[in-house]
Length: 288
Ligand SMILES: Nc1ncnc2c1ncn2[C@@H]1O[C@H](COP(=O)(O)OP(=O)(O)OP(=O)(O)O)[C@@H](O)[C@H]1O
Image (cartoon, rainbow, N blue to C red):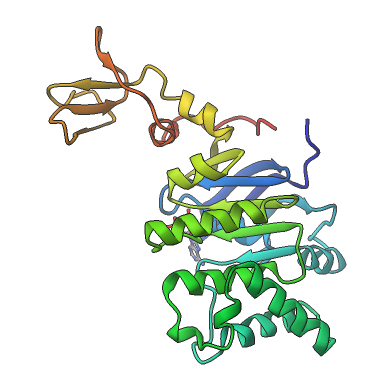
């Protein structure tokens, strides 16, 4: 078993009596772990806790050996983590360089020369060397996301928290972003929240599914796909018992759920497995 780099046990956070994150136990290792879940599942809240932006009501966690429940531990944890939030809070009149440099100031890089070199390094790493002097408001959505990734990479953190970095990107930009995330996952622990099951299938060595604040699945992408083994089938009509079913381009229906006797099986995808984990019993304990 690979040693965990980030460990969390029983993390719970409620907003006005509703548990946004409910007894989450996780052990992350190096590489990219995908975090899937429907809107409101608690993904952003969990990421904010792990990035030390919000404290949990209950539970404990460590980031590369640092315990953020103390002031000193929190500072140490922040030095080794990078966070790409859902809304990076760009100042639109900043250039890409100015923004990343500003983040480097917040990350305590006080020596100007070292800081500027670091800002250039991370902008180079995400392929933005040519536009570092451009104002952020003039950059495309994909480039803005790359600026946000560059900011998260300042200081070469060992733990990278990415909250839906590929949202709103076209397929080409998304592929480019996948390359960057895969690169970032080499020798680092990356937790990637996304609605793109394809990103998870293509990138992640592990996937966690959350629903209603709880972990519903924790395993490899192949294991998540295997949840749908024997539970996807074709038919001439939509099957009334299917959890989901739609007419495909061939005119046939593709159904996901519990098939009737003699159903014609179809190849399951990770998305089918994901769908089938929702609404079921939460896993009792993380698998790693
Ligand atoms: N600051 C807040 N105040 C009150 N309720 C909140 C707050 N932040 C989140 N919530 C609630 O907590 C629950 C989990 O929200 P969260 O944003 O973590 O989910 P999510 O899985 O990231 O959703 P999405 O995929 O839509 O981003 C939701 O019911 C949400 O309304």
